[in-house]
Image 1 (cartoon, rainbow, N blue to C red):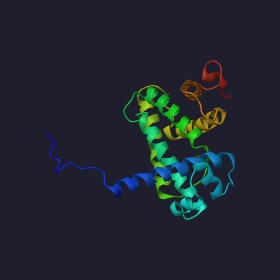
Image 2 (image 1 turned 90 degrees about the horizontal axis):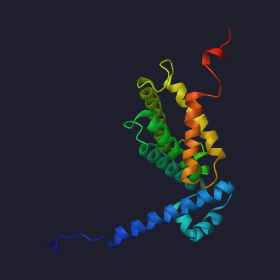
Image 3 (image 1 turned 60 degrees about the vertical axis):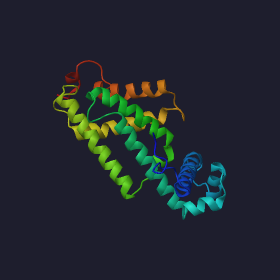
Image 4 (image 1 turned 60 degrees about the horizontal axis):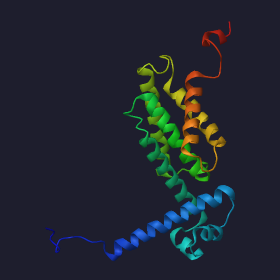
Length: 207
């Protein structure tokens, strides 16, 4: 039986914090929608999209630059969560590669504006540094497992991979269906692992 004297219930302070966090998330989501269509949109326009007063936006974010910075941090954190969901350190390499690709493509479409902003915010830098390191490690695992050639440089492979993901994301609809994401991920992985040439790769070398 519960001891009602020790049972904890959310206090008013915790409820206010939760409300504040929801408001911030709503503003950032609205900012992404607006700025992806109109990069020069004002705080007023973003407030209207979020369904809050302009003063509410200004209470949460000191300036437009502060809002955009917070948006890039949120997008980076979403990217990190997407990569980790693909289990790059534990799943079979090719399974992880496909899953990570599909998850990252979804994030790049959901946060199209934020992912395109160059940011030196420490959290953004950390996420991208860690993500790049995980990508290199995944290609090293794939090489060690025989899924890619033994002479493949994992760092080079990761850079090519990034380029393919960027190109694939550009071709996706704004809200891609799971089947579309899966097909795009398969196309990226297939292009990465088999290339575009026909026949044995040795026939394409210069004499």
